[in-house]
Length: 406
Image (cartoon, rainbow, N blue to C red; front, side):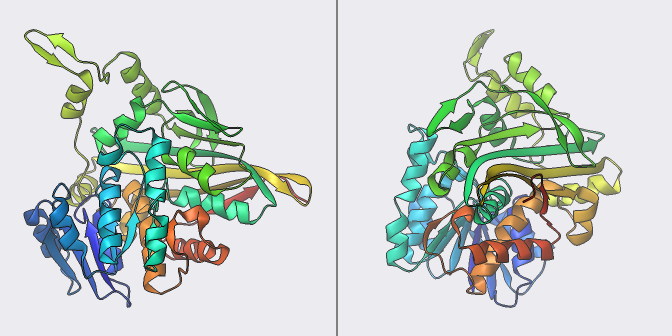
């Protein structure tokens, strides 16, 4: 199998590339991006005969179309704004597609998130006609969170409620950005949606505050409603759903709320002297960029980055054999543990990267029979179970607590 990883030298893309080259069914992994210099530096750093570099500028549609030709699958590990154009390039070239998340593509900026997702789903028949799969939402959350919800649905007669929580604790002597600051704060300032009784409802950012008792070692943490993919996508794929929400948690969240409340991430321009500038742009400009793999190693060695604990958790409610059922699915990773498995990764980048790798490896092994536009929760039961086993092999273990026994 030949695999093109767009954004292969990024925080998550590098995890995907470094893991996929280990698979016996993978013949070549191409690390691609706008900067050929960065792609080549990545290949030089992690020397492997299966690994090579390529320049692909996703803003150049023609270059993208030519780049994907001849590959078995192209993975968009850049960001969701390129999803639609990469999907179209793949289906036109007869190539399987995979992404890690969902949001507004550059072509759908004027649409609602729900309408934007429909644009991706509209390509379902085109992929099916060519016998291809478009794997959407295959990171951590979305991705592993969708897998948890879909697995729960397979073990209930009816799944009614899905409540997702992402919690992260960082112990560092200096500020660290685990994710793209711009994309993170776009989600922070966007009105979060909940899905309730067949209707999407918009709430205010940082609303719905609660102290949630996460499994140890996280414990009680403040959580707030947060704009995220699963609330948009799951109602399209899981029947009987009555309620879906997503909350972000952790000790840094009250600080993030204060930043928002003070207007420091407002997108409305303000005059400062002779200049008009949006506070959001200033805040992003002064935020530390996403930490790179070699920086992770350096900061761990210097004792600057001491620990990160990341958790993805899904609470579900449903019905089985006429009885109410409640369960919690969760997975927790630590920085110190994942660096024993792959140096230079954060718990977050390992979570997201391995979420993607699990599905790509199943595709390489010809164990994904689904075709068309597919999100993890829509996979066949045996495909979901195979993905969960893949994750376990890579140290990402999904735990289950069933609160109701029958």
